[in-house]
Length: 421
Image (tube, rainbow, N blue to C red; front, side, top):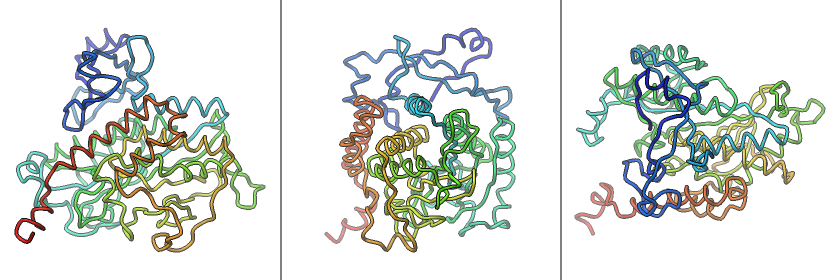
């Protein structure tokens, strides 16, 4: 969400920022204001906040001649950051970590489905009978992905021109599913790059008369799209890995083990920030490479948390988030839970070997948005880390999604019940 501004106006007003309506923090994905928020409402008159551009995020947009994009911080009239703004939430946790002597490297592996239909074509078809860019699973398939290489090549070149380093592109498990991996960076930089990546995918797909979706589960008969998050612990100046300890029998530092233990211990409470939509929970299916149980393993893709890499590249992979996650809030939640683990000196549970899907002794990831709401609402850790205003804000938004969905009659219900009930 944002504004387009003329170059002269932007250069003249860049120091002050641009005014926007605070109803933007209260709308659902269709742009309808949700009643009941404390931060903004009809009763409060829906005032303004200021988006102050962070010039470090300035990027030219190669696919749009003469245009650039910049991310801004949301500022209240008193000069404070809007506490519920995702970027503010992440910056707060980064600052807390720095005060404790830590910094991080983060990376996100974001998947999406690519369709031959344009966005307007999808709407005209009511999103039924869409044609994926591949008719079959193309995981690691070089021949089939050549068909969409003109689009992917332009996307890689665009991201490179924006200063966003692409490590790999590959076909994924589902028909037409793609994955592009960006090089790791500090959490704020990587989260901002993630936003630009999504924007570039959608706009370049539209330019090619195709469409892309970051839904967690775009269809019941195909694999979901994930956003695996990689996190490692470093010294404040970024010069020394604090994830590893060569003198430790397992090669891991005690701080990193406490960090991992904290994220796992609070995983159910922060799932709301990994899976924020009704659709998100349809991705968590046994045998789908999406996790269902809270556990960890070394290079084990059936677990929710995977320990990967070696030496300075040692890191935790969080496999719970879907492609629909807001990565700024997801990163913030991981850092908050991990710092709590360090503070409480939590111990990692035993490693899970073999098929985690088949182990009933392991705790399950919340199975629905309702369950995730309840866990987040009752989380003392989240309320301590973000404050009641932020937690209540996101819980309220999620409850609205459930309320809207509960009143909607689906095609599945009509097919199942219309004649036979």
